[in-house]
Image (cartoon, one colour):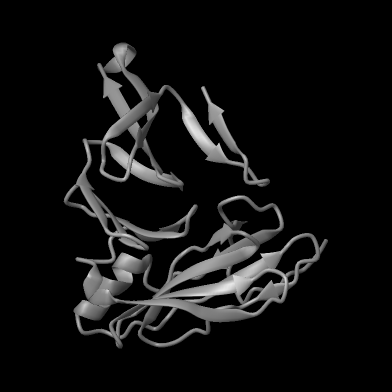
Length: 217
């Protein structure tokens, strides 16, 4: 049995989107990013969380974003042999994107944006590809915050999960009936950057570890 010391983080997952070599673990001192924001707005101290990267199969561990009071990190994404991590510094009012090079194992600050660019941190996440900072607010609006500005309303039960170039992929769920007549199913809705409906697929789309897109129907 291999022992991997990740300082008490007890759960790891593959880094999305398209790698079988890298896993990540994240601590949740205040829950997710939005919950940490609520703690900060309530005037309490955000202790900061930690994100580790684990290389498979050797189990080597890296800590690309130092833990810092007043900040909170979200899950990373993989793109072109680099791993990108979202970190919000509530005290300085900055959204920071860090880049970890999978070859040199060096991390650097890649992009900074003002926290005022978003209404809140609710569902604020990184996606690829291309690398994009997105937000799906509780008001039912989907936004791309960076590298371009996109905003449009969604239909009920739509959730963004993937960007592929100019196409945006949303999962949409349905349910009808009750008891023995109850039925639940999901579809994949594809929209362009203006929110126009391009296609609806009766199934799911996933990015596999080699970066290939699989349509599951």
